[in-house]
Image (cartoon, rainbow, N blue to C red; front, side, top):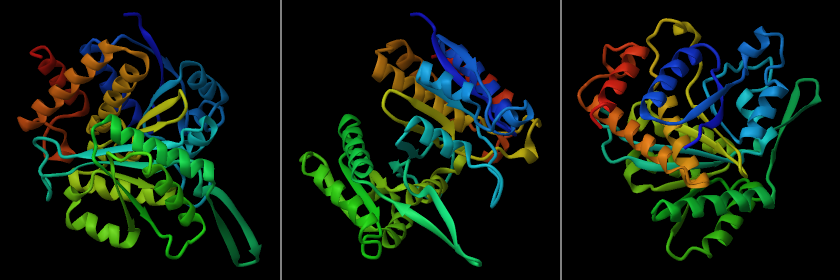
Length: 342
């Protein structure tokens, strides 16, 4: 198979360190990839470019797929999140966050295997804010029939294609009757097309309670933008934290796969960051390319990597955040060694 060009955005803080580890593992897996490296975030600013350079966007538009490390987002001031800009500029409307227990990672729950699907382009994250009068500001929540319908359709298609049995919508339509009301209206409409998939609606505050009581009762969660952001991180806590969950942002023939945790500048360059979240995102990327482009070689590489990290974790070999003693690169080396036996 020929090499597939993929855009690589190392990111900020620990980004370059975990990116180097992931590249090492992907190479050892046999994945035929030619990386097209581009900058974003503070790294781009340091190079005198915009926080999301046009050449980075152009590269993703050309090659259709990117793997992205964490980028720093200022709190309460400064530039708009790189992630939000990417999603809007490329219309990556479906955020996908699989959350499942991993062998060797001890948590309070042992039966978590759910997927969170989040609408990525509107809601309160539309960024429509203004000052009404001195001392009074307003943020507008945006919902459109198009966006509500397509994310619902995407979620049900995903559930069917992956053998999932139920889609649950978390909403607050009892209060936000127009915006969240539109979201569940379109979800109900789409659910009627999928008799093989159970459909459920839960008001989000009650849903959060049920989720922390028994996450095993859920399968696919479908949420609007803000709710999806919050629930994604909450659910990560069931399985060990943001360092062990992957993430993808998918649109029409374009996708960005990313580490969902922060850039952790306090440990940058110390070789102690966990590369697993970015590696798991890379596995999602390989499977996506296998599905959309028929790259069966990528499917085999993804399975090899998954087997390797499951076995290594089961043997108690992990980074500091999971109670182990391995550094970032040493963890990658352990996976490479394990793949020789797979």
